[in-house]
Amino acid sequence: MKGFNHGYRINGFIFCIDAYEDVKGDWSKCPSCNLKPKSWVFDNGKQTACGCWLNKYDHFSVKAESIMSVYHRNNGDLSEYNSDQLRLNWNEYCATMISPCNHMDLHSEDKW
Image 1 (tube, one colour):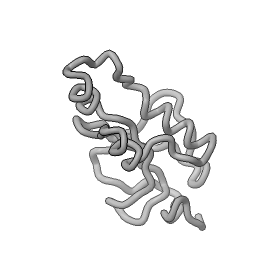
Image 2: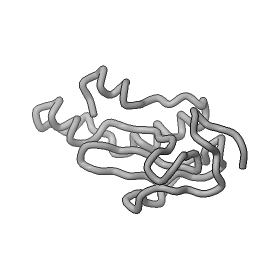
Image 3: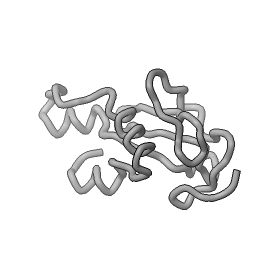
Image 4: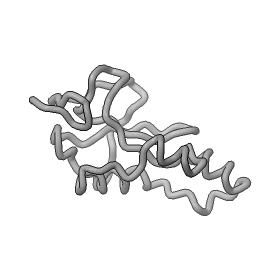
């Protein structure tokens, strides 16, 4: 494959750390590499990896607010947490090529 997606080389396969897992459900394929992403959900973050990467640790990613961020922002109340938000953000990115959530967005809203 040739070209770049937001500065990341477009490759025909996903290359990321083993913590990323195959996604289940209705996830769109990346409009650049044509692959469904893998996702990594952990206490202080949620993000994707697809075939747009520079190396194993540096790749294009869509993000969503973590469960611990919601917990801390709402004094332990998790009613605002959407466990499906990463998939929704990914599918929105695939439809528009604009990431609805990145580190700058999260930090400006005191989220992580």
